[in-house]
Length: 124
Image (cartoon, rainbow, N blue to C red; front, side, top):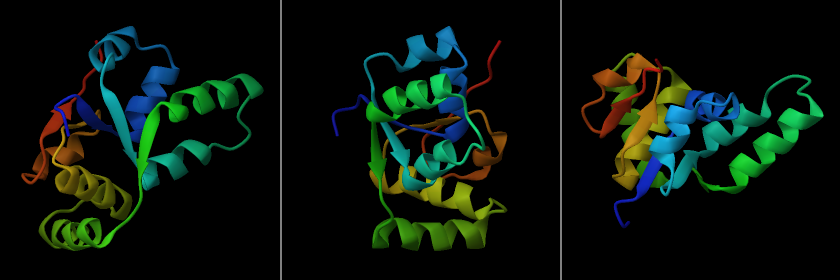
């Protein structure tokens, strides 16, 4: 990894799609990684508009999707035993931990995970 990678949470992608310019500026020039969980969550919206589907497609085309593997699985198990994170959040946090890249989310629940480089994003 070259130091320009970042794992982004679902809520960050949603904020980008909503037009958060501060966030877009912060992420500019970085390689965006997402967990397969985030990919699934982004496709789970019921009855999205055609415009949203196209915007989502363009955004996700710029992201590298990380599949589940044994390393992520093993760290996930530790995180579930050590924290109160939900299943999906534990997988996403484990992905950041295994990749050893910063992880950005606006979900404060991730603050309890000391095995990741967590960036808490609070929009103005």
